[in-house]
Amino acid sequence: MQKARQIMRQAIYNIYTYRIDYIRVFIMIRVFQFLLVIPVSTVVLKLMLNVTGYTHITEQNIQSFVMHPFVLAMMLLLVLVVLLFIYYEMGFLFIMAFNQQRGIHYRFLTMWQQLNRKLVYFFSLQVIYLIIYITLLLPLASFMLPLTLTQGITLPHFITNEIMSTRIGRVLYAVVASILVIVGIRSILTLPIFTIQPKISICQSFLQSWRFSRRGLVELLVLLAMILTVHLFLLLAITVVSTLPLYFLERNMPSTALVTAGLTLAFLEMVFVVLFSLLQAMFSQVTVAITYNTRNVAMPRYSYKSKRNNALPLLLCVIFSILSIMNIYSLEKSVYAPDTKIIAHRGYTAGNVENTISGLVSAANAGADIIELDIQQTVDGEFVVFHDRTLRRLAGKNGVIANMTLSDLKTITIYENGLTDKISSLDDFIEIAKALDVTLLIELKVHGKEREDLLPRLVEKLRAYKVLDTYYVQSSDSQLMTQLKNLTPNLRVGIVYALNIGPIDDLNVDFIALEESWVNEDLITVLKAQHMDLFVWTLNKDRSLQEFIEKNVSGVITDHPDVALEIRSKQNEQQYFVQRILNRLSFVF
Image (cartoon, rainbow, N blue to C red; front, side):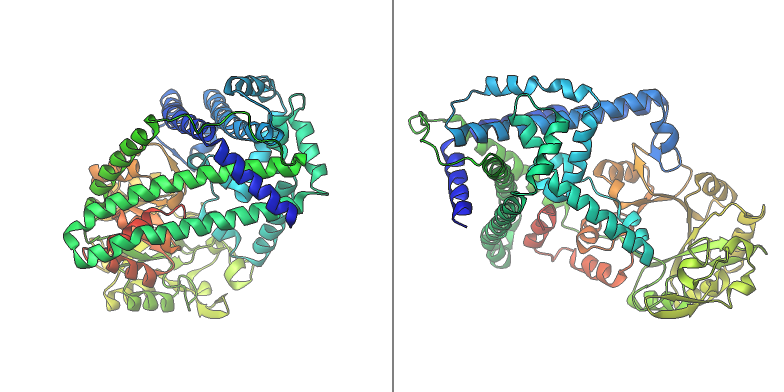
């Protein structure tokens, strides 16, 4: 414990003593990141779309897109750019920490040249080790990597939800995750070893990290956990203290709330950037101290105390002013009562089996605006309400929906979360929905054995129930939905996308349903300009629901309609700005 305290004290001392160096490095890195790395990535993506002739990328065309030679080349270029950025950013921090702890005088030019000498490894097969290393490191120590480049890299929720829906999936997920965590932890020192030692390869660094983990890894992980805990505590404490004035002002002097909120948010954004930078610096100091067993050394031969830098306070004031103006404008736009529709995913699944009449009734009683259900065509041409292609998950049987009749399916008992129910027909759903006066969003699942009268039969059924003008129909088969829209122009038709990259143009439908990972501000703006609705699926976290309801998208598809309705009711003219600020600081809370 004494050694841990000594390492922490020395790390804090080094960061404070060399604070001007750290400020210069972080400013240089942020400028390079926002003025070069991110714009280059955007330009490369647009270039790939233009060269290949694709308007946008979806799950239907992504395979042919990524197999295009130009796209493969550009993707390799993007991966290389991101790797180089991480390498130089963290490389500077590791080398600085090593020199500071050894009492070695250093220059930025010398460190730059030291890092440049190893660029040869990025153009060899050994770069594969680095790609694997960064991938494994993301869930373990993403706080040390460039935040804006890594915070959005996650496995889409719909994939994890499907994996976790079965016992075998949960077991496999746990096993694979455990293996990846173990390998990731044991290789965590690959980058600091590679950047500090001038004559070592990526492969050798990987092996050294693996060997080190036998003796000093526990100590390193404990220290890193302590640093992260202190960091989170500081974030929370500063957030609470900073929002207290706004908390009282908006209740006693509402006219000042908007400006105060903009200033508060700008201050917190700057503080979080500073604390994140300090976290990276602390990580580098502690990692180097543990890896190379450095001790306290003589104080630096030069000091910054006599140097005054008047440009830094001026720069901070300019940044603060710009952020405040942007935040005031943005917060002012958020003061409205959203009309986002709350769509219950497969009915209300809490306390019910999915896609059942009981789930439909519960969703209607909960107040959902629209209730989503999945249908498939049976062998006798009828429509059954069921999501999967087989009965395996919900009924424990091997039956294939496309090969069974509706009457046979309606006799089967299905199970979920200790509950039981019966399979229903689309007719059953529509009759109950009409009695409850709720709107349905019908998702047509295509299994490949549909009859030729699929669409006419569906349209005729909706027409018979007089719901063509009020119901929604969607499917992941874009061609089928285009045909449906041409067949019935007054029916609201949409396309379901599991992923989308690039602008969406020239779609002859009324809405799209897109997985949340791929929704961005540009897409929302473009769709609104085209008067096309956007349904975001499947939002089950409060933070995600809050984010997209605040953006006022057309609809949110969720398993928790009650929570979504409560969030929507609060997001109106009476919601306090403190809550809006906390919502925007989503990468912390």
